[in-house]
Length: 561
Image 1 (tube, rainbow, N blue to C red):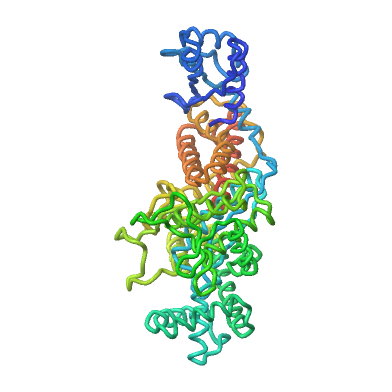
Image 2: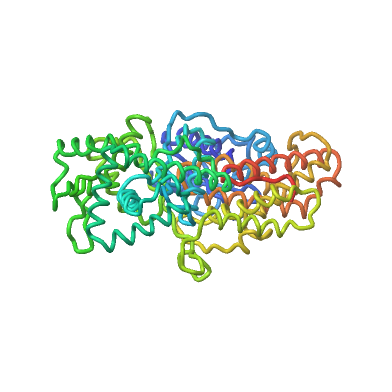
């Protein structure tokens, strides 16, 4: 969608109101040749059907009153009553020279993403939530939202009772363990928990001690958290994530509020005791056997489940953070859970109808065999190993290239390749992790877009003149590129509304592809006079769109590759 299209829609609506006293919100769709700025409106058909009049007669009346001489060629009527509009080249030039910008919309959005677990190394399963979450935060902020990032770290619950109890039985000091040692401890405690009922009971009681503030238990737990967060920060730095330590609001942060959550739900009559646990049974939520599905808010041992924590988080984000919109970037397997949590929170009055809560679900990262990505031994792939492999692969591609900061560029290209592969397809789909395809310099890849930016940077440096304005768009390739550039703001707004970052990736790839055609058909440095100056300005505008767009999806834009 071009930035000038809202103006055309407004004028079509005004013509309809003048002719028929009817207010409409016209839709403009690209016709068969969008590269020349051709658009089509079905407004006459809609009015004709509503009033029982011939759509072509309606179209003729609209065209007679439509004032678009400053934007378009003379409107044409086609078929049963479509109105065809073709933008003037000077209209496109002006839209490129005066791109749309965003201002604050006064809305605060809280985005919950990444969510690694304490005492475990981040793995490939954390890639998508972190990459998608970062991109959405960038886009939402660019589009005028006040964005609050929340890293809902898993630092509470049964596994910490297991691990602490295992430490005590083995006589090991928590301070002696790094993150890998903590992960090994978790694996031992998990086996012990599953095999020994007496140990399992002790571990559950240890969770209650943790939640109750027992000093010895809390001290061991605190070390686990600190070691883990230090390691997470290193992974985020390598990934180029904008998440910071201050964004971490783990499950433990809501501990003091959990009894109040249960008490308020009980007061509202929303909880039922079931096998010693306090549960909410919501209408319409049934299991495969047809029995009602419970939201377990307090377990039979007196501890609180993660449902209680999620409810407390919703309430905190609305009442304390004053969220106007809440976004959860969590894999598709949690869809039912969040549906039930949001429903219960709305029923309890903690999540007003005016505050949308959106689960941004996503598919799985697959290995070459089409199954969830694992190591050759069948273990979980560490995220840091995966990222370092991508950087190494990119570094190999840069061998022998002159004028390139090889280490920095390899990192930008390798990490960018991984991010773009994740973001460029519909987030609901699974995708195969294939480094060879990801780092390719051709096709719909991150390196292809980065190279387009680097090539523009080199061309503009050779031009040696400051950019002026686009003044002439005579070649169809110029028009196509210009038309795409004017759609940047609309694409960003679309992603902010739909929370589908692949739409921005598709747009950037279209821009890079149109740029390649432009290079082939429109000489820049060898052209002369006004044509040369205008094409340099068009290249400058294209470089900015690529740079801004890549930045929004969290990908660096090297000046040389």
